[in-house]
Structures are given as structure tokens and as C-alpha cells.
Length: 151
Image 1 (cartoon, rainbow, N blue to C red):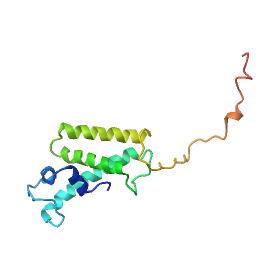
Image 2: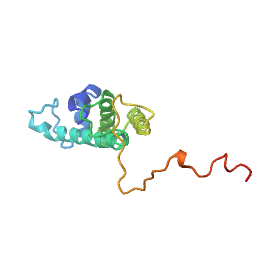
Image 3: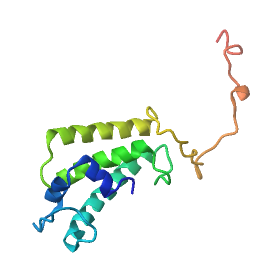
Image 4: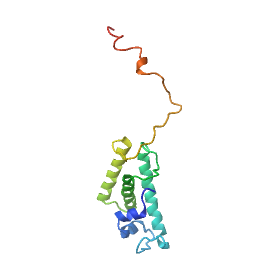
């Protein structure tokens, strides 16, 4: 995963995360892996992170080899932004969160187009098996501007 629950806690208060994920209304005081009543909350946060990471991979996979083995800081930040949106989607998405999500997706589109870089080497170009290939070059041209002059 590109981000963790701790990263999400840096963006959202624990009380808000609990509010967004506590479908059973167990109302734990904090998110603690040792607390059995937090298991479903942690599971839902991890599912939101996984969904965000899949979305990131779908855009970044155009230029980079995904999943990233070493996670660039920008990818981690985008994972947090999209995860926060995914968590809010379970209830009600405030305009600010929706706007931040839209910006994150716009940045991912720029990464896919090559307008924005992640500071790592892109994936090597795939060899096209089964696709037509040619051995011709510009020096093999039969018709040039010079020999077509007058026609």
C-alpha cells in the first residue's frame, strides 16, 4: 500500500475516521489494532487505501512500472488524498474533499500524459509482439522533393 492508516490519521482526526467507518456504531475512543472493536474500522480504511492505490496504478501504469516498489512522495500524498475522498464517499463528501480529489485526479492525468514527473525513471517502452514492423528509413525514400520536381 502506498499510504497507511497513520498517514490517513495525519490528514483526518481519528474521531472523523471512526465516524466514517464505524457502521456497527461501536464507537471506540481511538483506532487501535489491539482493540477487537477496531478490526472492521481498520479493514474499511485499508480497503479505501487499496482502492486509491488501484486508481493511482491505473493512471501511473501508462508511464511507470506499477505497483511502485519504492513509493515516491507524490504517490503517497495522492494515495492519502484519494483515500480521504473514498472514506467520505461512504457518508457525505464535503465540497473541499471533492475539490482535493479532483485535483489529485488531474495530477494523475498529468503524470499519465508525461506533463508531470514522479522523479523516477519511467517504465521501458513495451516491445510490440505481433504488431507490424518495418525496416525502412527516411534514406530509403523513392519519391523525394528533388526527383518529383516538375510533376
